[in-house]
Length: 307
Image (cartoon, rainbow, N blue to C red; front, side):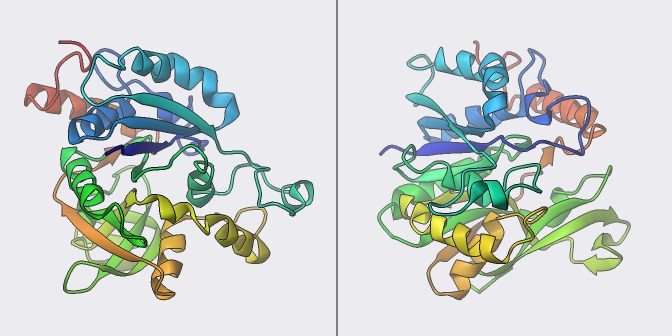
């Protein structure tokens, strides 16, 4: 069965500075974080790669990874196709005045709009990830297995749940979707929570303590194609109520709304793997060190794509 890896790489990365964080080399042969995620996804069984990018990033993404990845089609297991779709500020639902609605806005509308841009390109079960996050191998295997088992069940999705304490950065606050689960580990609610930081006691946000063992979403989701159905109408409703300058159409909030409307079931697949990523400039050295340790432990080859 065909399955796709969808990579959200359109973010501006305003907190990073000094370049585009998604295109920052961290491996010994200038591999990006996303190289390792693609490697893990292909190993798990995914066979199409779709980059969601801004149009101005196309040349950079092709130069840094896309052309190299396309050259590997037929040479590495499972990889069959590489595609690009654009997330654009003015790509709004039909009938809306894009010029008026975007006049005070500087960047695209968030992860929900990013996934909406995949309509017409993605027609199979798919996993969604961020380009600048390292997730570990477990999440890709678990989500691929789920999608193969449940590919024909509309409204039945999954996410990879990370232990919150394994996802925090020592260099600044982060945003996580904090998960509430039932006894079968199905999502009952997801709360987009900003400015989460580590503390001696565990974690907090804006001075409020948070259980460090809470399951956190890192925007790694497994969806069947029907998730795209109705997403444009969701976006239309969002624009009717949103702060048009700063509001974001976010996957956790979309999923949460569908949960409460009885339109979705989402299984949380717990992983003990530790997240790391490039959010702030200071994170880069940490990521390079973590990748080095994984290579030394035999998790990855020194030269990832070459024997």
